[in-house]
Amino acid sequence: GIVLLFRKTLKAAPEQKTPFRFVLVGTIITYSLLFTFNLVLPAFFNNARFVPLAPIFSLPFIVFTAYSILRYNLLNIKIITTEILTFILAIVMLFEVLLAKELGVLVFRVSIFLLVLSFGILLIRSVRREVEQREELEVLTKKIALANSKLKRLDAAKSEFLSIASHQLRTPLTAVKGYVSMMLEGTYGVVAKKLQRPLTNVYDSNERLIRLVNDLLSLSRMESGKMEMDWETVKIQDIIESVIQELNIKAAQKNLKLIYQKPKITLPLVKVDRAKMRNVVLNIIDNAIKYTNTGSITTSISLEPEKNPQNLILRFKDTGEGMNKEELEKLFQSFTRGSAGVKNFTEGAGLGLYIAKQFVEMHNGTIRAESEGKGKGSSFLIQLPLT
Amino acid sequence: MAEKTSKKKILIVEDEALLAEMYEQGFVQDGGFTVFSTVTAEEGIEIAKKERPDFILLDILLPKGDGIQFLEMQKEEKEIAEIPVLVASNFDHPPTKKRADELGVLDYIIKTEYTPQQIIDLVKEHLS
Image (tube, rainbow over all chains, first blue to last red; front, side, top):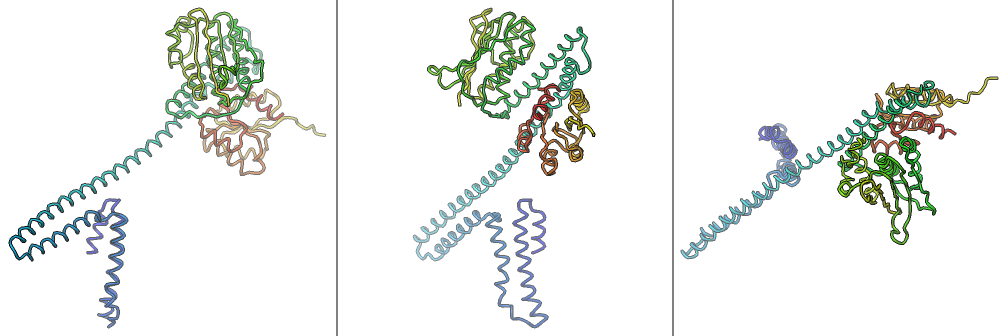
C-alpha cells in the first residue's frame, strides 16, 4: 500500500505532488505507529498495553488525508459528497422498495427509487461538469497570469531597449557635436575662414540628427504609453527667452528677426515639464524659421482674464509662406509636411509638430494653427492651464 | 613658499574613449582644471578617495557596474559623499534618472544636448 502510494506520488503531476506527499506522510506515520505498538511490542516484548490505542494511531492518516482533501482538493470533495449522498438516498429508497408489502406501495416506491436514481445520476454529472469547468478556469487563470507576467517583462525590456538604442545612436552624435563645436570655438587653434561654413554645416546637420533621434524616442515612448512628466513650476518667459537665444543665429542666417514681445504685466507661474515645453516652443519657432523666407517671427505671452481666465496664451506669428485649409488640417499629423516644405526642400521628418501637439496635450493644454492663406503667414496659438 | 594652486580638480567617469578625451581636452584647455579620468565605477571611487576632486562628471552606462552603483558607493564613503556630481549620459531612462535624483546628483543631463563648453560652464557655475 505504501509502495503504491509512493509510486503514485512520484508519478503525480507537479501540482498534485504536495497533497499526495501529505497522504504518504500520514500513512507512513500511522503504519509506523501500528507496526511498533501493535506488532513489535506485543510479539517480541510481550507488551500489549498499547494495542487498544490502535484507533488513535490511525489519526495521523486521517488528519493528513483530510488536510489534503480540504486544502488541495484531493479526491475532489464536491463530487465525492454528491456521490455519497446520492448513494445513501438510493440505498434508503431501495430498502423502502424491499420493505414494501403491497403491490401498489411497491410500484410507487420503485418509481420513486428510479426517479431518485435518475436525478442523482444527473446531479452527479452536473457537479462533475461544474468541477471540471472550475478546474479548466483555474488552469486558464494561471496561464493568463503567466502570460501577463511575460508581457510585463517584455514591456520593461522594450522600454530598456529604447533607452539603450537611443544611447548608442547618440554617442557618435555627441562626439561630432563636441569636436566640431570645439573646433569652431578655437580650442584647436584659429579656424580658417573658408572652413567655418563647412564646419557650421556639419554642426547643424548633426543637430538635426540629434533632434531626429530625440523625436523618434519621444514618439516611441508616447505610443507605448511610457512618456513620463517631470513637473516643475516655472516662469514660461524663461523658456521662451532661452529658445529665442538658441535660434537667433539660425534666424539671422536667413535675415529673419526673432521678436519677443515681453509681457507688460507680471505673469503667473505655470506647472510644466520644462524639457517638453521647451521642445514645443523650439519646434514651433524652428518650424516658423524653416517656412519663412523674409520678415520676422514674433512671440508673445498673454493673459485674457475676461475671455479666458483659466489659461496662459502663447502666440507665435510669422510672415512666412502661410498655409491653405488642407495643410492646416494635416499640420499636426506625424510624417507630413506642408507643400511649401516640399517646394523648398526643407529638412525634417514631419515629427516636430506632431510631438509638440502631444506634449501640449499632456499639459492639458491646446494648440492650433491659423493662416489666412498661402503667402499670408501663419500663427500658432498655445493655451496652457494656469496652476 | 609654494604657490597654492587655484585649479579645481575634476574627475570624469566616462567609458567612451572618444568622449572622455574630448571632455578632458575641454577642461584642460579651459585652464582652470586638473582632470582625472577613468572608465569604471570602481576605479572612479578609488580615484575620488585618493584625489578628493571638487567635482565629478559621471556617465551612467559603464563596463563593470554603472553610474548608479558609483553613486551608491560614493554615499557609503564619508570622505567623498559630499562631492557634487553631474550625471552626463546619453541613457535617457526615466527610472535611472529618478534613482540618480534620489542619490542626490546635481542634475542628469543628456550629453547630446550640450557642447563640451556648455558642460564646462555648468561645472564652473556650480563651483563659483
